[in-house]
Image (cartoon, rainbow, N blue to C red; front, side, top):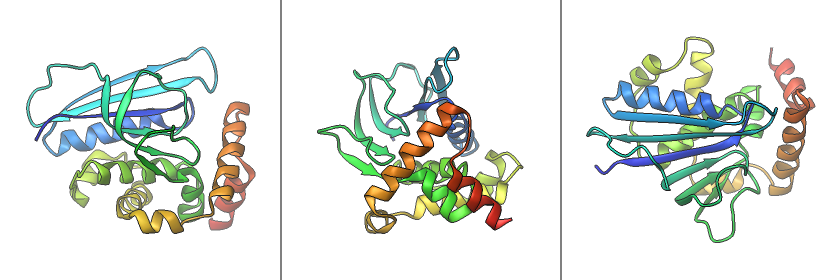
Length: 204
């Protein structure tokens, strides 16, 4: 296989580092050569956060990503010069002319697993599917932290199992967009959206 390059685009607090590190650990467990670089603004809450990941069966010689095979976009703060063959984005974040899909990851984390943080693992699952990474339960068990491991595995599998028809049927676009906007505002303010708190409490 040829080397694949992945870029994860978001802001501080959205789990960019968690998604990148988890995917890198999973690929390493599966025997891939992996490089993972982070770029983030630590001076401002809600500042840009980027992960650049490459993997291959052979040693990787070029760590610079200018054209990604896949971009996972949780916020639109990334470099404008970067191009991608395919974009997986939260609602309203694809740019004109891009080929890709939009999925309300944060809302799905709340609706399906009771907490918005599991939206990160749903996004990872979809990313792994688009990249044709064929993992096993054992791979996931070895790669994931022990905390919330059952929920994380379930969320990854849920994201991996999404297809175009199910993505279209998940939620009305307007509702998802409204949730994403409220979530972004609350992240910047340092609090979770009310929906996440209420639905998580209801599942306890």
